[in-house]
Amino acid sequence: MAQRSGIAVREPQAGTYTDNMALDLTQSLALGLRAERFLPGGVDSPVRAFRAVGGHPPFVASAAGAYLTDADGNRYIDMFGSWGPMLLGHAFPPAVAAIQQAAARSASFGASTAAEADLAELVQQCFPSVEKLRFVSSGTEACMSAIRLARGFTNRPFVIKFEGCYHGHADALLVKAGSGVATFGIPGSAGVPAQTAMHTLALPYNDLAAVEAAFLSHPDLIACVILEPVVGNAGTIAPAPGFLAGLRALTRQYGALLIFDEVMTGFRLSAGGAQELFGCATGDAAPDLTTLGKIIGGGLPCGAFGGRADVMEFLAPLGPVYQAGTLSGNPLAMAAGIATVSYLLAHKATLYPQLDATTASIAEGVALAAAKHGLGVTTNRVGSMFTWFFTPSAVTDFSTASASDAALFARFHRGLLERGVWLPPSQYEAAFVSAAHTEVEVTAIVRAADAVFAAMTR
Ligand code: HOZ
Image 1: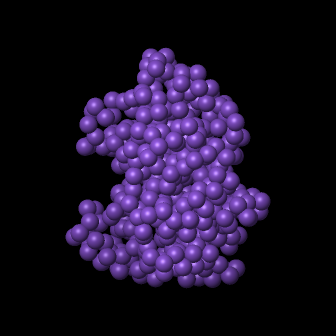
Image 2: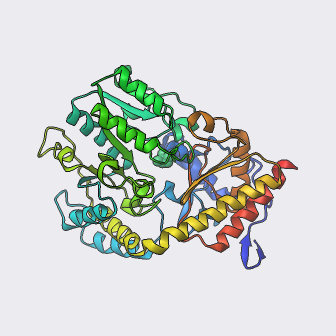
Image 3: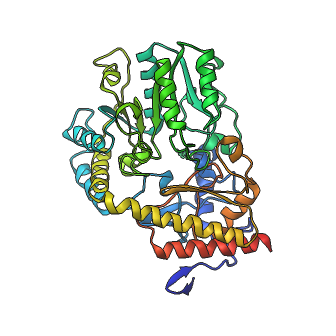
């Protein structure tokens, strides 16, 4: 490690890893080989396998604040934050303490606890449109259940989603999905019956005319429109002015429900997520249902879906739509969620401006470095989520995101990793900044990116 201005900057050096990487990943390689004996591809989620960027994924040993430490002792500035949940940094002390205290009272009961209503009340303070909610164990479950509820409530079969949006891996929602599905170029997963996928209409993001045409051609058949109000799973893409309001107007006109998938954006873009940031948190502008995940569980497996009370009361045991879960409302997840969300609520006046400023410095600092080296990079940022697309053209939907140069992104990713900065390993994912990232990390990231760009254009 070289020390410059008090900042540790890892210099590439000869290591035992052979894929042109200067990192010593000896332990991670051994752990990877062992994992491959037992786990398909050595992973429990495809995007962890680094197939899109090359090289071998470091195996994480621990994390604290803005830093990950791997099994070989390499330290990285974390730019993916467990894919979103770690808004307050790793091992956030109030969450750690709350989890420890809850664990001492037993990890699971399969029966109701006071903590579920406590967290639900905090969520409602953040999201006034969530009059009632149900906890589940993941964002996938939240979206899958919201879709079933929308179909049950409206008694209609079709769902509109948008190309490049990812709503978890439930069958009906994998059609033209983002995240790993886009990363690996899988047009739609094997194992999803055509009869299931045929009720999913995948349309271009930010294209209101396409949505209107779908409603016109399927009158009385569309149960809901589900979208990421800011896309994170095709890289970061903001809604065009008028897009969210246009969807609200069309869904209301045609009697369909509007579902905001705020699994990534909820509690991240503001305490009240994208719906608060874009002024559609209340009244006629609000979505009918919202799905949540990631931050809501403070890093533990947790999700939720909620919204209009009359819709939510269609759920069993009150209504005919069945949805259940042994670990739903798990006491450890509730404890971590309460510690996290109550902190966000108490500190939101300073926390979100700080996140915004830090992320702007990183995103814009690296964009300037790219320009200096003559690289065409488009930077999309909303609050503390952003993406550097390796294309000079504007990115407004999945098709424009796909114009990015994946090979350049892969080189950039590997170069940053060597220099101690760990980006999400796909062009089709958002990077996330936490409250633990400071000026020290900003400077180190911009400096590392500048060095990588220099090497790429040499
Ligand atoms: N929603 C996460 C980011 N796209 C997925 C992470 C994963 O698939 O492991």
